[in-house]
Image (cartoon, rainbow over all chains, first blue to last red; front, side, top):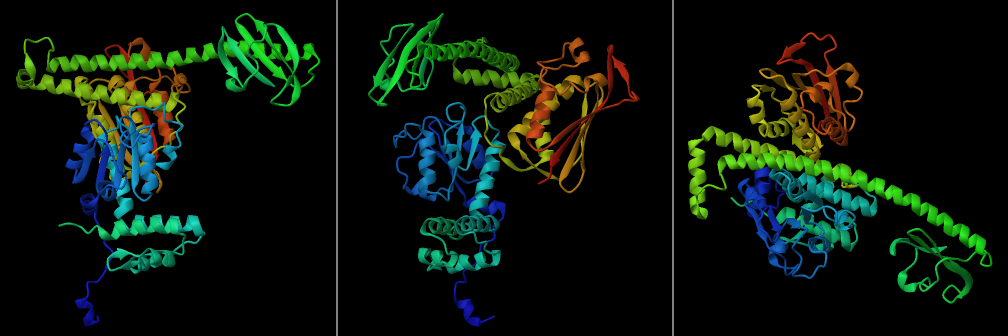
Length: 218
Length: 343
């Protein structure tokens, strides 16, 4: 090994256990009423799980930092004046942050069965589901954000959907490190490395940024 | 052809925008040819009224013929008459479903209320929140086993309520929501469901033996749990007291796992096998003991297992080798096999 390497901080690809992933994942419930499940998720090792009553600003730092949103259909989205409450809020969150997971939950079924928001969000769960079901969903989407395999699969799918080309695992792994510039994701480099349009490029950039920049806290 | 069909003045169906309509202010059972300024053509319009139903109709073919206009109006009228019957039939079906739902919810809710009153009598003399909590504390410590079993009863009935609502959502509400199939430990799923029913097994002195299994199955938690809740609820109701329920696991191949529930339970006759999974069917012996419900249990179990890409088999003992009587009822070895996809 070249001795010079010792003096540089070598960028590397994080390998995370489920416990590591649980520590770095930020989960935000948006619900105007206290919901016991939030506390139960926290006590199950998801340290960064909290609840807010509503969202006032889609660019707020708390929204920016969150990886998984659980949005109640009733009683939220009022501050941003969505007539269809949580559905509107979920839609806006997904449009603004397509790489983040948005899960809707509600105790009502009739009103929103045919709403197209349901096809935009990542999942939907009943309010009277067991805590275990909420935990399983958190696990599923946290893995999508922080496990190497799942990130690669997401990128593969985005590229394939757009260009029809299947990128090899090794190529994506190399590209993951290439697109960084002084710790930041360089969007030009993303477009070049993956040969995609700006729209998919920005999603891929966010996926890589999330995956790489959340180092595991001790 | 543009129409508005009303029943007692209330619109039933229409294919025209009311704000953009020239079918108002017409005289019943009269028709007229007129020039439509919007369509820039001659049309025939009028109202055909018979009984409660009023057909407001405007057509652009054969505008000079009252006869053709009338035949079309009568056709619409007659169709709506049959449609009215269909609507009544549909609402009857719907009422049956809602009645069944509310009946079951009331039954489970009643169990919850009775069990919670074992823990705290709402009419006891305590006053204020603090003293109420103290009362509960002392109630629990004074009757530890009764309180524990009451809590289990509440948990069990809550599970049944949850399952009931899922069944309603999935089967009867035109719900086309996709299933959330994830990898789950089958052992964990069964243990979690069983834990809500311990009290009922203990009451009947039924021992549950569950084998270890480390396989994961790819299923939708909500619907598979509904199937397990109903299956285990049936086990608590129909298993012979003082017997054993055996739950074992075996890999059928690399892709499928067989879960076997073997029990000594109320005899199922051979002639009942074809019907047992039909909606509304209850077994002869279960009816004679008054244990039967609305006959949807087995139907739901099969339906929800199949939703998950699984198979449900029922095997009865045709040799009657373990046939026995307990308290006058006939019991035999019955085996339920659930085949589920391995993750």
